[in-house]
Figure (tube, rainbow, N blue to C red):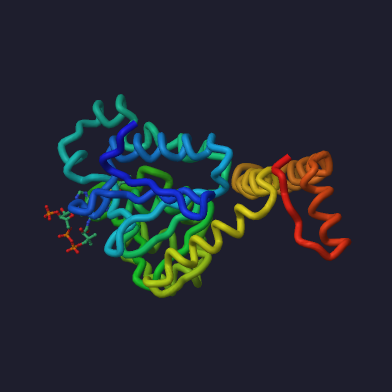
Length: 259
Ligand code: CAA
């Protein structure tokens, strides 16, 4: 598939970087961009050489939300029948390898929601997060009302969604929306460092970690703990568990084979 709204590249032979690329629209998200993003993520997820994926944007904008010009004249029937805008967003959720959002500048509306769909967010000190849909006469439509309160709690989520105000990177880190904040010129180095570290571990264990942490948002504590314990026990069937623990005991570096 030829991409027009994203670019892709591989770093360190193992990390796939996907860059949202509609600069004139501040990377506003339309169906074509989301189709291309879903296609790229699935292809990298299926590529055994790739251990981690990164979604990023430009210095000015990760993504300024769903494309307002594409939806301004939509009728209810069109939005409902076409499942606007999330018809293809489930693809992102189905990716099993870790996905990091590298956010600089605006991550608003669908842009904030896309970042929150990633496994964690590393932000530059210029990042601004927000759910400004209220200003457009609508509400967040791609998970903002559900993922934002889970990330930052009800008070801040309500504040952001009801007033449309933006949260800067410092507040976002303090609130738990982002895991790290670094100066813009260090953003990709920081993200790549994290991604390559992940790639150095057992891929089976990283996939199990992702699946299990995500389970915390889908189940009660007892079910989640049971799910965790079952996968923890299952990992003792892998060669990577033997390798990782033998390497520790014998004070050497582990060489994981993803087996
Ligand atoms: N959709 C379409 N075009 C957009 C856009 C969007 N979400 N955001 C910005 N653009 C376009 C602007 O129209 C402008 O285009 P022109 O040059 O052709 O006029 C260009 O990008 C640059 O934008 P600005 O001139 O506005 O740049 P700025 O620096 O002055 O402001 C901004 C930046 C604060 C992000 C402002 O552009 C803005 O408020 N954008 C809209 C943000 C928004 O409301 N997002 C939520 C969308 S709804 C949604 O996402 C629903 C959902 O939950 C899925």
